Amino acid sequence: ELHGKYLPDEVVAIIGDARAQHSKNISAMGVSPNGSLIATAGGGEVHLSDPKTLKSTKVIPYKGHIYSLAFSPDSKKLIGTNGSQILRWDLASSKKDWIEDTAKISVTGVMVGTDGKIISSSHESKPIVRDSNGKPLFALEASIVYDNLIAFSPDKTRLAYLGKDNKLRV
Image (cartoon, rainbow, N blue to C red; front, side, top):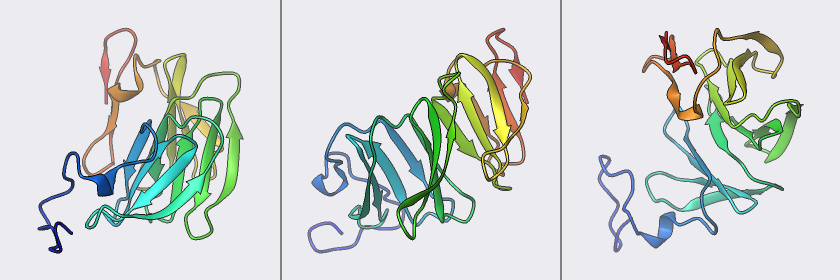
């Protein structure tokens, strides 16, 4: 809504609009697969917002810093990482329903495929593919350079990433 009028479907945000502001610096963001929610993290809070109105619909408190956020394929769960743990929140209850301790490596990225598999990434080790409950299944072939150098294809059936050896893998 802008000055009493709803925004056209093509508009996803207005830069500088106070409605979309988070209470603290945003450290992570995710958009639900069904397009119904935007999640932002920062300052000990995860905000869930309606993308049409940009209004916060729910605030989930947490301790620490969130580096990455991703939604489950059904948009009912939110997965994040705080560096030493992978966290999953049930959005209906706002409660964490599992926590995977990754203290041996610093996990700073998390992604979710259409099958619910979770990919956790770190610049310190190889990305790990996990089942929807967080159980590690296997590691990818090479360590990645930065978390933003790993991405799913638009249909989320393939994964591409750049290894520390500067080779692109699909």
